[in-house]
Figure (cartoon, rainbow, N blue to C red):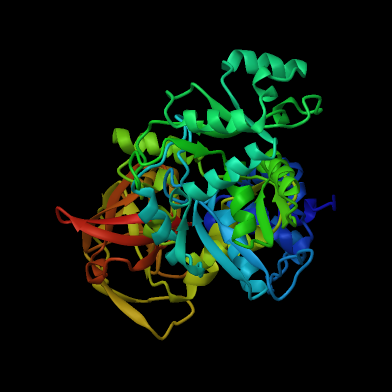
Length: 549
């Protein structure tokens, strides 16, 4: 790994000078300009954390002195068009698929694979099919009825164009039955009545199940009986080599019985295919040429290939991607876990920020373009990697920053008594890039954040855009010069504000009165706090959702 220690220190100092404190998640994305590889993130993060601690221990003055020596290592970011790596056997007739299981809303983790298929279909101007993979699932991972609409909404928001109509696997059961019967007729599958414990021991010891020995005619008769039997009484298994090095590959289940009611088709069907059975058939019949899926589905891929070979079908190109762990979200995301928390009322709904669903990201003010760029930057990672959520935020910041107006907000407000203040109003830029566009802020009472009052007690600080004051028991104005001293936010004419944070907690405070003119959905930057999306006014309180710094 390239030595990036000087660059790390340079960006840590720059970040601390700009924001008052070095944040490792903001330093990391800068290093990709200097050749940092995704697979080296785990190695470099401890170095960044150490550098941030060193920088945060310095005074403001010492940071500036140190930065003068490291500034030459800061590279001005040049936005380059990122290209996805080429896929093997590319042609003019490529067909991709994205196929979510509807157990909940798409979240930032699983949307990565679906978007990757979409981006590749766009790269090659290829066809892509939208398949809802709604076979019955397991007791632990059940279908959520509302997920159908949530997934379709998210796909539209992410601009995932696909060949219509949407395909539902729950409409294709008779097709799977037809090919299940063919496997039985060919002597390649069998109906098994053995208890789980017996089968588990047989697989572990490489012993063939007695149910395998019946001829195809009897297997077909047992297949018909399966539709009348109780749940768990029998399954269809494929015949594999019972000496296969991987015990999990030995005689895997192709069909099982389930009496759970299906959200779309009720109890119309009781016998359901496994993931590898349904996909082995559909990938062939739907003409899929390229499959992009996670490393966690390798055994399912091997089973698909095994079934394709039985029927003599051509193999699509299958590319496995490593899993991604996203740092900085505060919790591990899971559709199944979120389903329980939404159902219990712990989460307010599928757009609760703690789900990290597309609906929640949209409500926070994250753009679909940022999510697409985030996935494109990760690309077709072969190994499991760790990426910081700041990578997503950096893309969003670049996209929205120029169009986002600035306002003031202070949390846990504390009133200052500045009797000598004679200024009645000031004019400030709506955005630093457009100084000609200004807004007028009335000045009467001054409120600052209680945490700033505590942090800078006994120091001279600057009220942003206004004046310099000594912050002590009797705060007083020292000058109006734009001195290089700590700057803090303040508000005068104000309205109550509360901001929903990504962890589900609320931050309370005052915002300047001008935010009363905002429309629902407008994104603003509360200076020195972060980007937020205006959500609604409730009981005269202006509610925002926090996007990122």
